[in-house]
Image 1 (cartoon, rainbow, N blue to C red):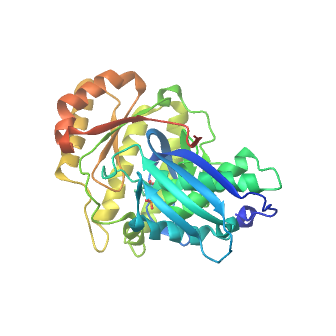
Image 2: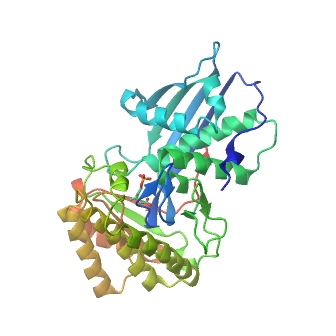
Length: 361
Ligand code: PMV
């Protein structure tokens, strides 16, 4: 993939001040990305549902510098408060994308960001956070560009930039289903940006529901960055990457045909395979908590007894995502209240569903 296409060619210097606000959602992977090479190239292709209610809203105010320098100058406010400890991550992100966004050097930036979900909910905010910043930068680039930028190119570049901040953020620009990572059976798929799942999806997966059961809201013991790195020299890495790519071929068929039983089996197996990689890393680690397993067992029991099509997935943490068709919403919410919320911290869970990606505010 030629990434030079993302280096802007003709930019004007006519804009003194501008401000843009974007809201971008989190996403939940069905086939997981775990393991990468430099610079943020995934070892296997992944696919996710874009979410809706779990989002980050970010505004960036740009003011043209009076005296130019060679640094990205910005202030960062999170939920109204200046956040010095979030700055290094953003600084690193800006350095990484500078060759694709040279205009970053021309402006003083004030970034204001807030999440719809509680900060310490254990929900990863890097996907929604990085994609929201990427969209604000693309809005500035559009305003500066002397050549017209197509909507498709804007989304592609935003995903490309977001990926350099956090791999999974590449899947938060569009929806409802996004693939990231080059895959032989997914036309247009790429290692450097996410693309919409290109096939017609069966109606059973429309407006699919995701209730996030908040098992553990604390800071993760092992960050995703460390976890990804432990896939280098991992004894099962090669098989895992092959398995994930095969699972993407399979889930593509299940999504198109509406084969929900096979979908359930694959999605749950993917979640457990991700955690199996953690259990067998060197050093090994466990992100699940006892209540994660209580919930998984209760879901399996509920499915057996009722014939429900609800299934679980996990990201790199202890929380459980309960995925189910819209048609089961009332019953499943009842089940959560009766049998699952007791395993959540303060009985808390977040009701979300599949969404369409970034929205300008
Ligand atoms: O985007 P990162 O580096 O935070 O990694 C995310 C990895 C998983 O959430 C565990 C899986 C995925 O594909 O989203």
